[in-house]
Image (cartoon, rainbow, N blue to C red; front, side, top):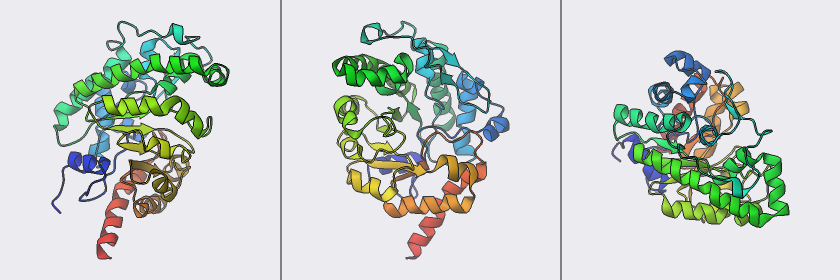
Length: 343
């Protein structure tokens, strides 16, 4: 088979078609302190400056030889633009929303600020994508990211209040999600217009907090609508134990699901029945952060033997992850391919 461009390889994998080799692409973030130091683009500045953001994002290609670039490192850019109380931290910590101080009480408060797409913290991602598209051309896919309404609800209402509302007043919860999805569309479409080829939609209805039935009740229809309306492939991301909602996710029309190491590759593949591609699921807090390259490659082999289409860390990687363990992901794919071809 002829050698594919990185973009061809990723798109074929997303469509569950033949590839020259399985691609490696993290649809969340591979930003690390080591890379921040290497290219002089530290947090939080790399989350707030387009030039620094693009410089740090580019290391995914230049240093790790992954098959895509994902320039949105955190999950809070929209929330900052909406007006949430922010804690930007330093280079070895993720910026966060102070959810103890929610800005809205209910669906009637949800309004899109007039300058939402012009705010510094949304515009930085849009402008970074433009820089990366110009620098890398059309053969390397750029993965944008736009928060789903469930994630945004945590940020603007507070986790506890929002989750209690799903029990006390589910119709109000659905109305809030319906209104919050406008942010998902606005920011996602702006990134597509800037040059994003794919969008990750993190929507953290994790098994650690809610049941699979919650996903079906509150999010499956919204996600199906997004898959129909966005003009680029979507990768849904939900952390935690999610195998109980994977059959429903596989029915949404999303191209792929980015899944956590709390779900074994084999059971995840069985759950989606080849109706959707899987992206993942190399363990972050133990394997990538503290184990060696041998252990990383073992997990790569486990994913590929199960049939996982795109190999990636399970989520945004720990900021102090060692580069050698990220390089080992790409090497692991090559090792597996060599062994696979011998057989």
